[in-house]
Length: 117
Image (tube, rainbow, N blue to C red; front, side, top):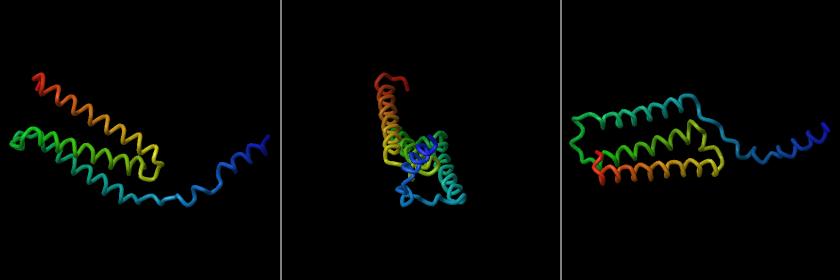
C-alpha cells in the first residue's frame, strides 16, 4: 500500500512545474509596492477634502474608481501572488472587480436618479 502511495505521488511531481518556477521578488520590491499603494491611498483621501471638491462629481467618481481598480490589481498580482498563479485564479479576481464596478455604477445611477445624494 505504501508503494502505491509513493508511485502516485511521483506521478504528480513529474517535473512539469519546474520550468514554470518563478523567483519571488525581494522584500524591498514589496515595500515599494506598499509605498505606491500608500500614495494612491493619499490621493483617495485627498478627494474627500472640501478644498478639492471644485472638480465635477463625475470626475471624482472616475478617479476613485480608477484608483480602486489599480489598487485591486496591484494587491492581487503581487501580494496575493496572482501574477505567478494559473489563469483560472486571475479570471476569478477579474470577475470580482468587474462585478464590483457594475455594482458601483448601478448604485451611482440609483442615487442620482432617486435623489439620495
